[in-house]
Image 1 (cartoon, helix red, strand yellow):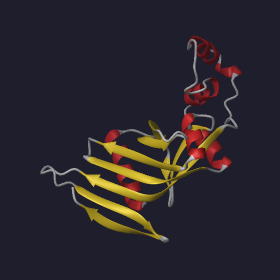
Image 2: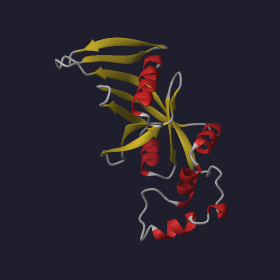
Image 3: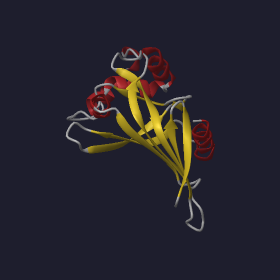
Image 4: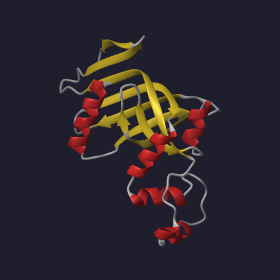
Length: 183
């Protein structure tokens, strides 16, 4: 996890992007995979953290099948990380703290829009946002942090001769076992 945090920190500096974009893959009840880009909020000692509304497709799929993967790719650095793990909804305090850290415009958009739901026109949403003082910007009850607890992390680093460095870290009890992989 320390190596992952270091790579993410280096990517934030190199790309000036925070939160770090990552592709989250889930599987629906019908067995179909689904992928979307999320903003990774952080990495602690045992999990990667992002946020979502609990009524979204990704949240429903996580509730049905917590096995997920995350992919972070930094072409500027010639690096990529793939994480496979189990997702769970985080504690309310964490959800509220992370929601409060979002820029006000992002909080307001989250409150007035039902991401991914059918919509006749975006104008009604723009009208609501035109008077932000009428919107309660507190963390909605259906907003949550999501913790992804990895069981495998693969680090890939590009090499000019295409003999790329690949290391697979797998959970081994309370620790990790590492294996170098062929490019």
